[in-house]
Amino acid sequence: MTANEEIVVAEGVRKNFGRLEVLKGIDLTVQAGEVCCVLGPSGSGKSTFLRCLNHLEKIDGGRLSVNGRLVGYRQVGNRLHELPERDIVAQRREIGMVFQRFNLFPHLTALENVLEGPLHVKGEPRGAAVAQAHRLLARVGLAEKADTYPGQLSGGQQQRVAIARALAMRPTVMLFDEPTSALDPELVGEVLDVMKDLAREGMTMIVVTHEIGFAREVATRLVFMDGGTVIEEGDPASVLDDPQHARTRAFLSKVL
Image 1 (tube, helix red, strand yellow):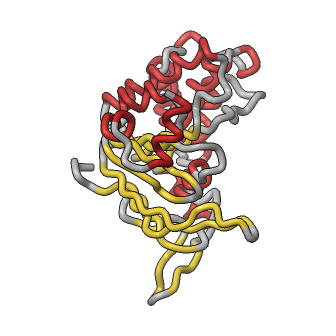
Image 2 (cartoon, rainbow, N blue to C red):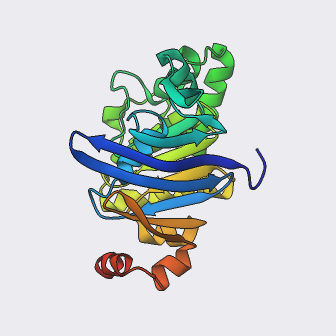
């Protein structure tokens, strides 16, 4: 992976839920090492776009590519054909996703949650997978919680385990869908600190967030969405301090 390499490319992406058009032609390119923060009001299509990026939602128009390959489809002539489930699962290995809700397996310890993907999806040798899982838990500040079950962890700790679990698949891009929105305010910082460390290490990230301070500090690019379209994008200082679009100004006036 080299600088200026395009990791995520969205071209005219559309998504409908029945008669409701949620994404109305999204164009976005994210390069290796970029941290792209996506802001916007509820219902603007931010989370839907993230879910399309790993084919949790099927797009209804346009094209999505990650690492130079179409997401969920192969092209034959001028037509797209959906990939078999096993190939979609293989693609998802390269795309880490952290949800609003932690989605941990409650009957597995923190260590076992992190091990699940490497052992049962990638088929890695157990010894190497266990060693990696311990390293990742230490990386998110939870080395001492390896044998603890999710129900015994705080929300912030559970979200950090979820980040470690996603990293265990060695993704080339990490997607975060409002990762702090379900947390008590005093727990937000510990999750954002882990994400800041990932950004400093050069992880390519797309982050849907309401944390304006995080976006200002960490993002290399900020995207503002509303009504299923990208209204404005640019470097964080430009968008936050001198927005060009009236809708962006109206939104920021309420959250800054």
